[in-house]
Image (cartoon, rainbow, N blue to C red; front, side, top):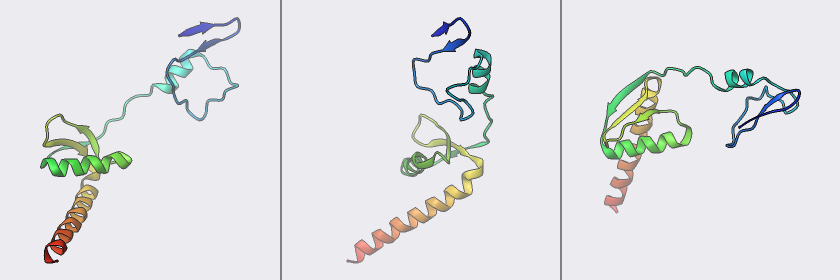
Amino acid sequence: MIKEGPKCLGIFLQSPLQLPRSFSSTTLFSPKHILFSLFKMPRAVRGLLIECDPSIKSMILKYDEERHDYIVEDLDDENHLVIKESQLQNLKVRLDQDLDEKIMQLDESESE
């Protein structure tokens, strides 16, 4: 909703919105300035399409919930993800470590 006053034009948003830190509650901005500040150009991200087992996909989804470092797009089927190309090595290392730990735990439980 836009409401005009005698000296300024204020924008009242019905949903919560985080404004940049440079915005002050006492500073008046034109609507054009606010729109250009809030809606910046999208950034392109290099991604890789990977195919994996559903169990591995669920592990990757769990990792990504923590910091959103890995997944660009979760495709609707159960085997495919698009991940950030720059994070491929980190993801492989993390998966190897976790899978090794699980295998060791299984070996220990079987030996008892």
